[in-house]
Length: 246
Image (tube, rainbow, N blue to C red; front, side):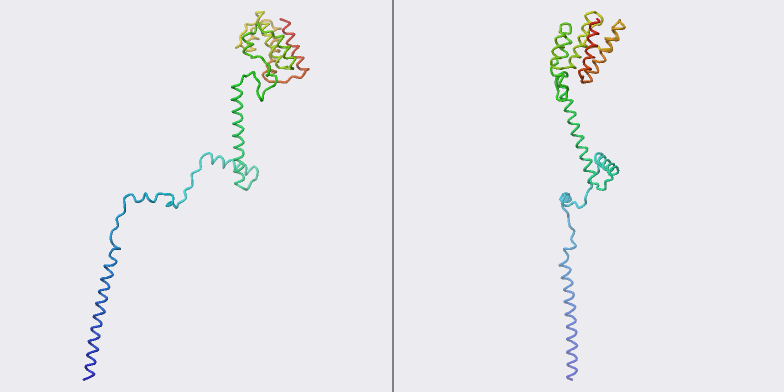
């Protein structure tokens, strides 16, 4: 009897325990479902939210700038010098190209400045790179306007005192044109060339003398040819003989 009661008691206890476990398990499942329900709710993004991430701090891809014509030109020059000079360092060849280009730029600027200064200065005036024989010369335009009243002998003597040989030859040439104009051999015009004057001369011998004298003048004056004493004496004699023959 006692064994039967003990068996029934254990059986009832087992059934009750099993029901409690099922209840707790079911309760826990319901609890988990309600607690995690927010994970499945639909999210709404702000309008134009992408603009917040367009700054440089959010760009992780490195963009390589496309090389222009100037960069390609420098690289080709560097490659050329590496081949010619057998250079192995690319940086050294690029430095050489940069140095050469900068040097050329400086020279070009100096040359442009030279042309500007030379243009704005009197063509017959002194210039830092010019000849010293241009310092004491009378304005060419002034002589052209007064060629028939200019005392060329005095001008020549003054130029000789200051050893201005090229200026002397210039005066001799103008004096020769004046003499021929005074004799109506030519018609004076400041715009004419020596070739045009030569064409007007009818006397073959005088035309030959004038052509040679004007050739010497062009070579010495416009070519800025420096004369030594011997050469100056010969050219001076040529002009004097031609002037005296008129």
